[in-house]
Amino acid sequence: MSYGMPPAEPAAPPVCPRHPDRVSYVRCQRCGRPACPECQRPAPVGVQCIDCVRELSAPAARTRYGAAVRSGQPIVTWTIIAACAVVYALQWLLPNDLVYQDFAYATALTGLEPWRMLTSAFLHSEGFVLHIVLNMYTLWIFGRILEPVLGRVRYLAVYLISALGGSVGFFLLTPVSMNGVIGASGAIFGLFGALFVVLRQRGGDVRQLLVLIAINAALGFVVQGIAWQAHLGGLIAGGLTTAAIAYAPRGRYQLLLQIGGMALVTALLVILTVVRLGTIGTPGAVLPGI
Image 1 (cartoon, rainbow, N blue to C red):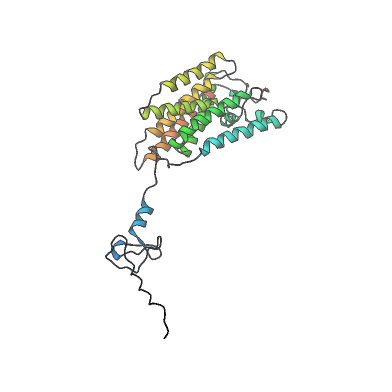
Image 2: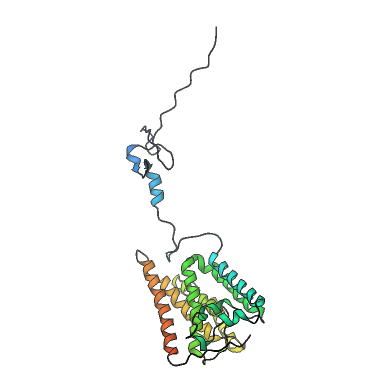
């Protein structure tokens, strides 16, 4: 007499997870779970279950300013710091102050080479290492706060418009000359203004920030070689640009209004520069060395 294996029990029929009383042999193309006719949704290939459709259609998490919520390091801040570090190394390595001569800003060159109003923000004094160290340290502190809140693109726009605003402030408030101006201080003061607007808009305490701004502003009047005019221009430009971002109503047209506001601030800086240019000449010369 021989003994065989006991007969296998039949597999239970697949049932819909949302309706366990309903058998379904149709499976979701995304998660593979059974889906009854009520839970099926047409897909490019086959069907998907209602849970997968809802997951795919759920809006991504956004900050109140419309930026995607991100975790991790402030990429834009680190990129700016790296760019300034590379440029600073080139200032030391290239002969005859080549980087300084080509990219530093002088008010007399505004009409001929206006790009210097931005490129100068990536240069720093070779004879005073603390110039770049303090600027980059401050950028790192404020960047870690502002970049996640504003979002990468908006934050970068605030930084660059602030840098431009610093140069415009210096252009408007100083005599025309060939003296070169370099440094990220105007852009850094723009971040001061940006954080002030964000804190005010959120109802935060701005007293400590105002003290910090006052101390740094005062240094421009007591320490030789610091351009307080650039600090003022950057502070105003950064504050106005961030206000255009922060106070744009949330909703369908938020991004469009933010872009329009940032464009208006930029246009105002350009108009002020053009008006000032109308009163001066545009001599060509060589920048004096550092």
